[in-house]
Image (cartoon, rainbow, N blue to C red):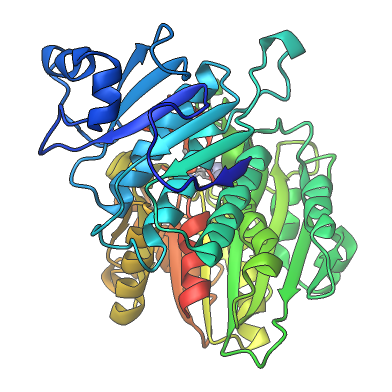
Length: 486
Ligand code: BES
Ligand code: ZN
Ligand code: ZN
């Protein structure tokens, strides 16, 4: 997808779809040149259809030869903010893809809008355009597929070369994460997920992969146990991005990479298993982020880490009542094999602690309870550090992603007390996302840490805003913002 920035608005621009932003304040307001080409019928249509200018809402009109564009699309942009522009651009490019359009022209008057000069507005529009144009059609027939946009002409937006470059990197990183989540578990399993990491290796990005023997010999009891019941053995992956200058800090991003979660012996019902290929969403986000670092070049060292395993119930599966010895030496008593993600993450968190990173975060489709509490628009954020929490809220806001802090309430630690091990792997039905986070906290030693439960936003069962159903690449943009601003 190529982005160009013509000098000024023109209703006669050569394009398949001409999208024009319309605000909530003036929901019939169009560029006069365009409305005149339609003898005033466009603004009349907006009024008669009660168009509100709600961000991301659209009204499409065929031009029938009045202008070169086939379609005119009014897109709501609310109060003109950068994040509302992301929704508008996403909606426009989503529409364009549905129509099989090759070219989209997107018009908004940037002048005076916050974020205009520093490129934040341009970044939002470009990110929205890429995300809205995304489709998952690898398993569809050629005749069922519609082509992606080849060219996007941005009109009225302040030019900002660096912001454009960064935004394209953000968009591609998010698309990579979506592809990895959407691919079937027959294609993405622990070894092939590790291959995805190997593909990213470069001069500045080193990749190490441990196989099941090494995992066992290094006492990663969590990753090993979860992977045991599958014919496809587990992997541990550690990527390191080193910047060219002296790094400002050393940071770790950790992902849950359960390539399919059948629940193990505590098997899930079919309905709960249907989309459990999404359970490597955290690792997909880590891979998406790592894939953009060469291009974005943040001045921090980044350790990208994930444990990959298929949670199955073969004859060698881990069992209820097993007591695992984890990487940091703590022991965990298994009360439910479906609470597997925290076992993988625990080993990764101890490993990152051992590396001596300044801060670390983990991303995981960890609990159904987070989906119940916050739905698909919000990631659940857990951290002991108020300042760190505020940083994450800020970065998520800039990236146009929902995040909501839940308490890491120490009073609930009692729920994890075990009879024979140090900890149980489940804390009961109540406060399920919190006890999962508390479990993880037992394996962090040193770095400032946040846990992001992306079980809700990582995968959509139905389309939301400009995103088609399936993998979303949740938190890719937010994590990248964090690294950029650190
Ligand atoms: N992968 C699931 C969580 C999940 C549920 C992700 C729905 C996305 C959508 C996780 O491994 C799991 O099964 N968690 C259990 C934990 C319970 C056994 C303590 C859950 O949430 O029910
Ligand atoms: Zn599970
Ligand atoms: Zn899981």
